Each structure stands twice: as structure tokens, then as C-alpha cells.
Image (cartoon, rainbow, N blue to C red; front, side, top):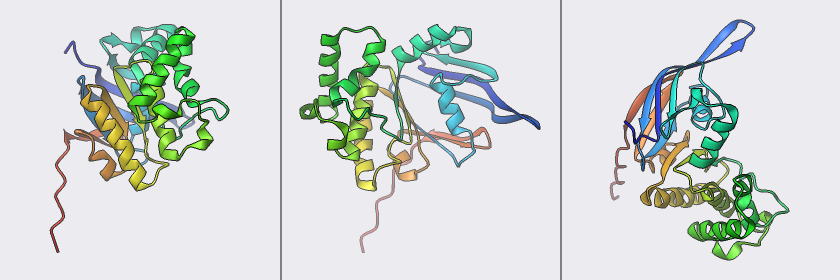
Length: 237
């Protein structure tokens, strides 16, 4: 379909080892439409992190096709791939990766520097996305003056700065307590409600429950791809 954000076909990935090629992904097929919220799950070694790296154009498959926003990534050169990634994808990682001596607005604006956007517009965009994640009054604060949950909100704002079609989030609540993690997932839900496509990796069922669709990997293959089931309410005592 032409309007898919992500399409992978017969994806295979193997790494060279002294004992020969070691397969990590095996015949993976998946499509993600604009506006979806998908959780990628699976135990350690299942292939989900490798898959996320391929989706983020940080790695390439050994075989198969990856279509991102209508472009076959295998047909693109290094610079074209980087341009497509920067234009299409915003990244959020488990570690917040904020520069400690730089104010929050300047941290958020960093991706815009590499996009060639002028200083005034960078500042305007940074303030707008900080406001979107509830930190509009902290633009000139340093990262060490705010909480871990607030730092992750800044990281989300940074991912939004280039106005991407897609956010890839790798264990975005992994460094947070459960209450703060729920707050961060509320931010992702609100962004998804605005139409932003979100794909996140998590090993936590309660975090995956916030997504609208769950894809589970095992031994390099997708073994589940289904809508998220509503959680049953606890029975009163």
C-alpha cells in the first residue's frame, strides 16, 4: 500500500561469526500504517532490537526489502538514507542522551542544526515541542535540574523537533519508576492521538498495553501480531 509508513518483506538478517553466519531475523513481514501505535515485544535475543535498528536505518537487512515512507532503503546511498531518516523518524531511547551543559531548548533543537534550520526557527520549534510535552517553562534549565521523567519528556520533545512521521522508542520507560513510566506512556498516547505513528520496543506487558497493536518476536520470527486486548478490571473485594 502506498500510504504505509513501514513495510518489510521477507526480511532476513544474519551476522558473521567465526562459526559462520548467525541468523537473527528470519522471514519477517510487517506493515505499519500512518497513525498506528505498535509495541514490539520479545525476550532477550528474540531479534526485536535488531529489527528496531533496521527500522531506524541504523542497520541494513541481509536480504528482503524495507520500505520507509515509500522509499526502498536498499536503493539509497548513505547520504540519502541519512536524509530520509532525519526527515521521517524521531528517536527516543532508554537513556535520555541530553547534553548536561546545554539548556533544554538547545538540547531539543540539536536535530534542527543538522537540518540546516536557522537559529530563530530552531528556538521557536524547540519551545513549541517543550510546551507540547508539558515543559514550556523549563526551556533554559539544565538537565540535572529536572527529574528523570522530565528528562525523558525533553527527549521526546527532541524527537518531535523535526516534525517526523514516525517515532521509534527503544525501552523509553526502562530508567523510570512505574508511576513516571505511566506518565511517559500518557505522553506517547497523546501524541498518537494527534496522528503521529509510534513504534516502541518494550519487555514490559503493562507498557505494551498502552499500544493499540502488539507484535511479538521469538527466535527471529514474528509469532504474534494482534490488536492490544483491553485489560480486565480487577474484581472488587
